[in-house]
Length: 230
Image (cartoon, rainbow, N blue to C red; front, side, top):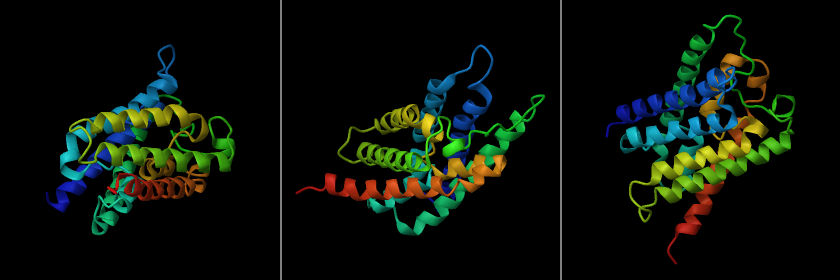
């Protein structure tokens, strides 16, 4: 598969992740009488990855996330030469998804960004959790997400089941961590919406790059050890 097609797939996939996942939070979570709530938003993020894994997994690997690309690189599953282009198009796809979401959401009378599904800590954490709690949460959740990805896509794992495991894994991660950070585990997802929220969201964005990448890299190291044949 050509690099152009891989990058195009990553752009579209990350676009869909942000539009579908963050869109569920911005447009549907608080809708009067039929709001989907935390469970619905968690499921929406899982479904975006599940659907794209089946749609583009055979083209680009369906990373949709700079942390996933880093984790796969450290885990020996992804070439270093493709990392920067993947990260660039993932971020651009996330921004494009947030832009479309902003156009749709701003079409409602009296629209205010109200956080615009951004990730945050301290006063900007949904549950008021501290910077330390947010940092630990994002590292650990991304670590577990990458273990799921690396394990489910191992050649020894049941064929064709990886998208289900990964999508359900991301759903579970959101169920756990939305109250703490609004769940990132994905720098591209965090960057896209933060640019439209501005202010505090951009000031706190550093954590949602550093923590997921650290967690993913640790998982890459851990899985190489776990999966190695003695």
